[in-house]
Length: 109
Image (cartoon, rainbow, N blue to C red; front, side, top):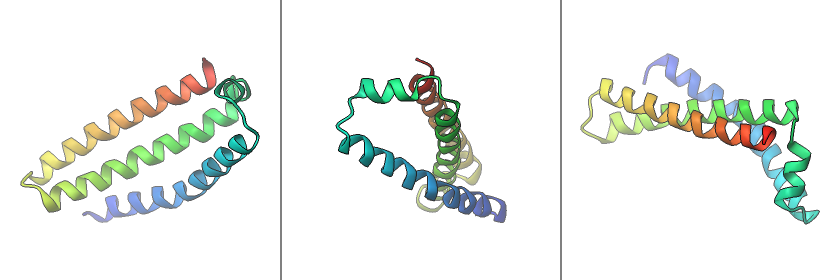
């Protein structure tokens, strides 16, 4: 793995720690309050704060996961580095598209 990819993966991991902790805290809060999906959606609808939070979370996860998959493919498969890189880029794009679709659905719909 190149130094650049190593640094990106470590930076996104550090960024994801507070995101995961906040996300889990929100889950606990919602379940303790016995909130329904409708309750949650009514609170997140139109919220720029939640859109920013989950948008940054999605971006970090997409980058982090695609670099990790690239490393696994280069170390454990017969794929060349270039092919593993393209598979990782494709995975990152798919993860980002699916994640941003979920964020848009959570906040705008």
